[in-house]
Image (cartoon, rainbow, N blue to C red; front, side, top):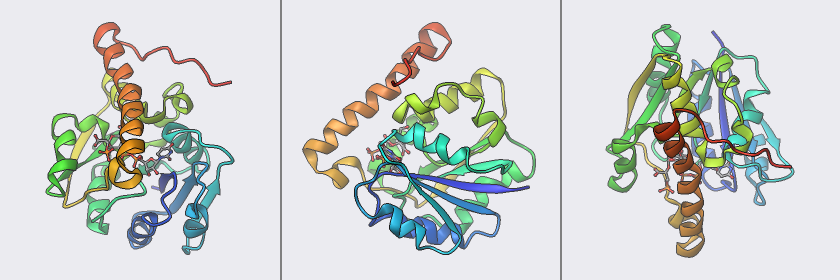
Length: 223
Ligand SMILES: O=c1ccn([C@@H]2O[C@H](COP(=O)(O)OP(=O)(O)O)[C@@H](O)[C@H]2O)c(=O)[nH]1
Ligand SMILES: O=C(O)[C@@H](COP(=O)(O)O)O[C@H]1O[C@H](CO)[C@@H](O)[C@H](O)[C@H]1O
């Protein structure tokens, strides 16, 4: 079974190298795809220089969902494995653990949940595991989910709710010791808080719409 790792990355030149090193050392992965989402730093150059990595530079920033969909369309692998580009502490064992239920045919999607990394990044996933950016999913299912290019950070809840809504099998896997820098650490307090507000809104509209109406929100296509 072919497994493509897909990494959406927006201005991650200093962080993406560690993630790509782990993916390159993971025997289950057949293809590593990086989508630099309109980055204005050297993310694309750093990724493209890693042997075995296929990197694309998008001309403009599409948002996380758009970058993930772009990567998914560049492969015919059976399984897509998504990781954020800024992870700290990811090892080939974590990659193995998240893929195991997929390769054994026991799940349509498996989700990696932070635990024992840092309190500040563990806490959100303890209460809301469905927001994680670390997951493996069958490619044909991922590509069935509507509107992905327009949902930005809502992508994780879009996937989680789609799988739940269609009664597909989900497994949760603990990623012990994995963490990531928070937006405020990456961007500073003002820009970080602004980016966080946008992210919460993009996530919240999925939650409200599914809880109230049992369907995804109606999100207009970007022109
Ligand atoms: O417009 C964007 C925003 C984020 N990302 C990537 O999506 C992942 C998660 O984003 P971020 O780190 O901002 O989110 P957090 O993990 O802090 O919620 C990272 O690899 C980002 O580089 C992206 O590709 N496009
Ligand atoms: O943990 C969280 O609350 C958010 C925000 O992380 P930061 O505190 O901004 O680093 O990150 C998760 O949710 C995002 C939206 O679903 C995903 O894009 C991230 O991958 C995930 O780590």
